[in-house]
Image (tube, rainbow, N blue to C red; front, side, top):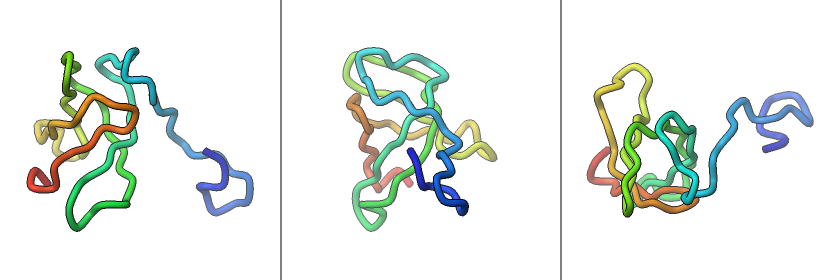
Length: 82
């Protein structure tokens, strides 16, 4: 993602996996949250990958705090979990 840094043309420091068919534990994903945080992008790490959902660690300071998200290119997390 270009233009995400303070310097023009600076690339985003994250490499995201947007292909749910290839999701694996350890992948970095951009996820969305419903409710009052809708529209804001979040970054997380996949810690579990299941057929129809993923578990995301969204806070490096609280690695045991996990969010359940949909299994799609940008997983959706229910805002009630946040």
